Length: 400
Ligand code: HSE
Image 1 (tube, rainbow, N blue to C red):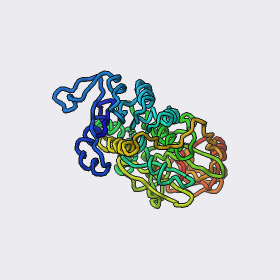
Image 2: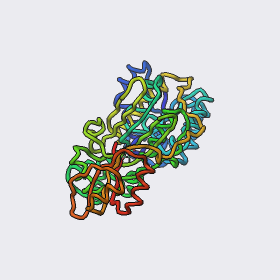
Image 3: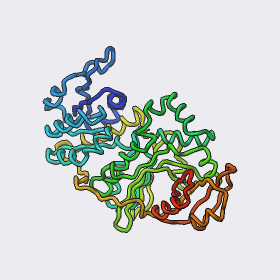
Image 4: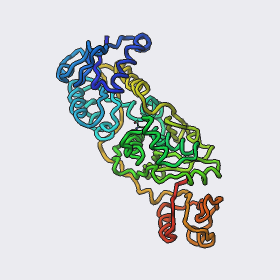
């Protein structure tokens, strides 16, 4: 019997309790051992909930119990999750978490502590909810040089963009409706400004290249400037707009960014709609592999936490190796990256536009006082220079 504790009985923590109890037999068969939740830590009381029998309010009860070998940290936030995790690992207890904030900030350090104490720090649920992506990246693709990762890593923004496209609605209208339905937070900043996706691509990039990527170094642009008119233009190309979190390793340089992209129907990420997430990973030998599923939600996220618990249970007394050094991965400025750009300008003078931007492919205007077009390939800094010279750009979206 392997005894487990859960820190935090919120949405994900109660999901972990449910997954372990409901799928008890299946897990036992696959693991060859039984999992039992011995404790759940929470400050609150839960009357008439089955958790009552195992609920404790004092973390030391769990940390000092030698019977507990695996902890699920589903508290979220940096403190006190960081202190509890550190103490658990120092006591030789493996920790499995869904806490992306903690993983992004302290992942490298916590893995090192786990290694020193012959236990593991696993975080499959921290990126892409229920989608297996961390384990494939660290294990199934360990033999690959990862050339690029492109992810739709935020369900809220993918939902908003899907609705804008399907209903021809504006950003503010769809956001308001998403908030009413509970698909978007009352304070949606972390999602719509791209910070949530930025944290997630920081984690994936750190794992792909083995060194620490600081979220603050990632160029991040959200979806707040995307309008109904943008969709009307890209529809003419048979394309859509997605918020991509990307990292690229090219010519010895590393780039990472979050921004909206114009995505053609040939890209497999084009078909990822609503709250779903997906990640396309390109390795130098295997080429493209793609991972798809629910990026959030109680049971999907809890399922990923329990997958880590099963892995830890198979490796009790051992450290599951994850290469993520504390040394910083130097990211290059995206200014030197080359691509085409979809641009809208407040002008109808085509000769002047080509004078400013070079040869372009004009789209059918969706309004009498503007033009939409696609530039030829150029670097970000070349684009910026041309846009500044033109001085009349309404919006720009990068072409994938
Ligand atoms: N706010 C996140 C999303 C939840 O919309 O995808 C999962 O991290």
